[in-house]
Image (spheres, rainbow, N blue to C red):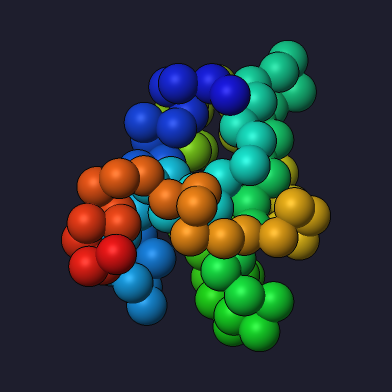
Length: 97
């Protein structure tokens, strides 16, 4: 995973939980290549209605941060399924876990 991309993605907040998508463990891949940036993202549940909105916000954030890599692709994936074990200690603490 690309640390610069992850740092930029920390500004994308899950609107339901109020925690950034990196600390929630929703970002499964963040890769910079010659054609742009590829992101693999999951949701906390397949029924989450926010996938498209979060994908668009990710694209905006990354295009702003990396203007030389405007081709940002976000794929929503379900395997492996998300679990609270993927969250950072800080995000677990914020949610009282």
